[in-house]
Image 1 (cartoon, rainbow, N blue to C red):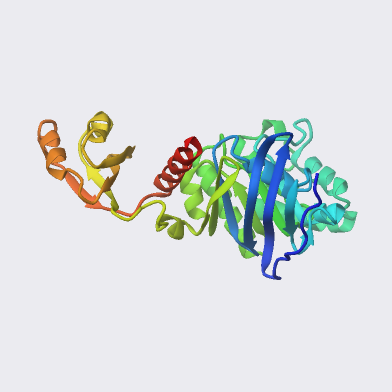
Image 2: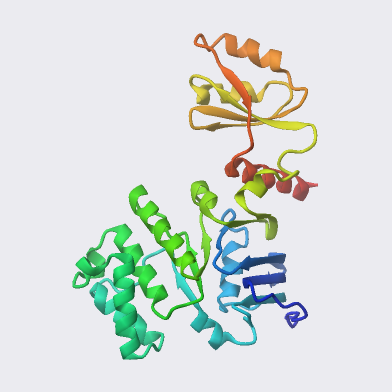
Length: 327
């Protein structure tokens, strides 16, 4: 394994950084030359299909795995050079509930305060702060295994924050919880960001990616895109010269999907709620589409030009990358 390059250092305003990071397992390259910076107090959404290298990047940033090449930084420290200091500055919340189900909420918080070496007096103060922030007071004496999914996630969040980390890593934190609990958890993340915590979250939910201040998308080990949600929607790779995105408002869009996909000049089509999203050439066969629609849409239909959604962005980038990999 080659020694990671330490030539480049992040600025004071950067909480998390990867510079030319590659990780190989034998002949397999899990992560290839990934570089990005996350500003302090940002909520960074890290997205990608399973097996894309997302988890490997997170493991390296947490100091659980070393890079084959490149350097990783967290809160101004090189992850490879100062692993013990790094662990004090980061919090990690797993997707699967990993606290002790037979301990009460309060016992879990006290246990993790001890694990992180928080002095008792400080621990009591910190627990009180987190209980107030997370609304856990009514459940302090309840065994954590008896909590609902949303309250388990709040407790897990509290355990990951007990030592006041500067950076918080969240692995699909809202998987398996109801919409109200999901919204409440995101409201807490916004509060934490305002309090100075940098949030690094992996998610498969596009509406959650929209909430992030910065988004990175990784596929086949490479970082394909990095920017704000609005910046990603304007990427030239997503809407190439001579192309446009249209929304077709119609009846029974799912039944029309295969039909519209056959229209000349339609490059991609997908159902989006009660509409179809179409990526088309500028000179696509609109008359052909109208003729097909006239046979199945007695109430009429409407085309309008739109910006792509984040889902459109990631699907398009993935398909372009897959096409290149087959060449």
